[in-house]
Image (cartoon, rainbow, N blue to C red; front, top):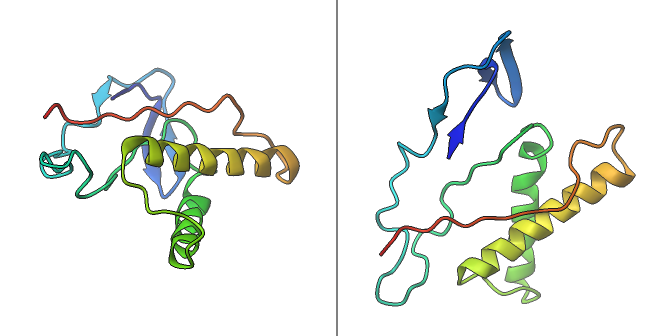
Length: 127
């Protein structure tokens, strides 16, 4: 995943040091090690989605993302949701989380910074 930015840095989710031109592109997955994320025997995940990248304005994602994960974990704990096992399960959860955030910005927020349609891409190592 390559990024082209016009910022010099970030403080939390706030963009800082805006530039008048775009910075050189940077490859953001170069330090991510995919070894061990998939169980070659079963095809399932060993460390499912231990990292993720969100493109765009991070402010609407970061405060809610972990809270929505906690909600899903609570639903699993009481038997109202299954634990994700395959890529499509994770994709469906991400779509739900994005839809939930989108509804917040459509109906409650002062500004709409998340819209649709929602696209989710899964990148898996070639095993």
